[in-house]
Image (cartoon, rainbow, N blue to C red; front, side):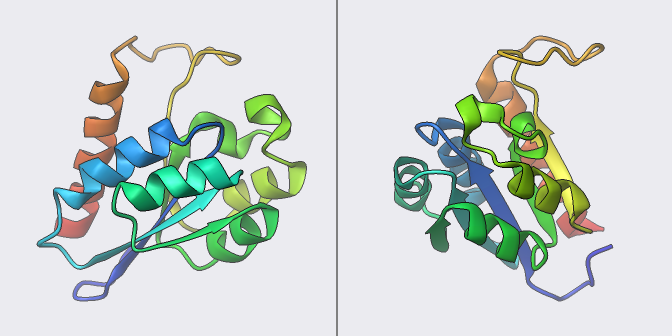
Length: 143
């Protein structure tokens, strides 16, 4: 549970070109009246750069950035692969997946059916998933 009146630390993790992560940053920037801090961690520099351009407050790249920041965040967002070793064509190391899945932070994951099919998840356009993720963060902020 996030303390009321405390700045919510949101960690967005993405890889590849950073499209999902930058879309999440843009959606969350719509909640600017809320007390939140958006940290962008890319599995590669392209992903980090895309999220910073979208308006993240801070950014870092690579395995150690995921390991360090996963334990400091209140909420972690990203594609479902961030909790799976060797996902995203190997960009997510086993240590990164363990850090995210082992974090006490609330996880909000975007279902990507490229390599994993999550049964029961309705197929939607990516923008719909991003909007739902932002709505869940807003709900957490309003609690």
